[in-house]
Image (cartoon, rainbow over all chains, first blue to last red; front, side):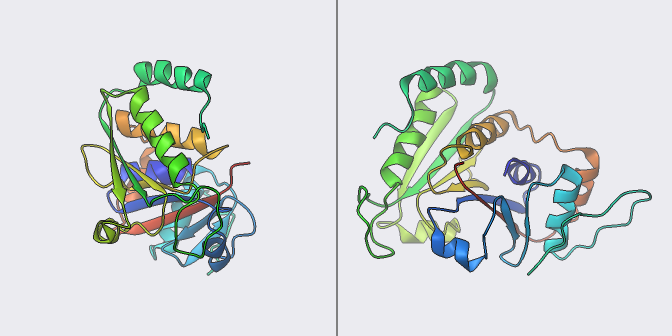
Length: 83
Length: 154
């Protein structure tokens, strides 16, 4: 959740919402939360687990519909978005 | 219920004295509490009283830097809609009185409490610590993007 917060601090386009999953079971069920951290982008694509900064940013951009540019030698996100 | 023990309050005060360098505005979106009663959805709020205690604790730990506004969404539903707050309790953090884009929905206890403190300090210091490559990627965002992170206290 720290990376999402840091992204919100860095970009005026980003809003980060950390949700206590146990307190909102219906919302958690709506987004298929079975493990945490479970990250949902624009209420559509999601990924589970903590990611390094570069992969997290890439996953958020992918969820926002912005394809990442290929970088030589760089591995893509290890967790594919599911929607 | 005392959400935060006294020794943690003292630690927070000392920590904020060293780490906070700029203003932080907290907005607590809440409804009148209903203690621990289980009520039909949409009525009452089991953790709103505790969330208020927590938000007041943060303000009182550094009253010269941290301001707190409490919005009762049962009296002012339009405000929650404008600020795009979906449920209560929600604590939003921002600088200079803006509606904060860093939010904690539900009572942030356990592992979520350090994340709340980290967020407050980062807002105060305007310190995101993202690397240049991440910032270059983020600059491509041209539309509002919501990042929801579901977490648990343990």
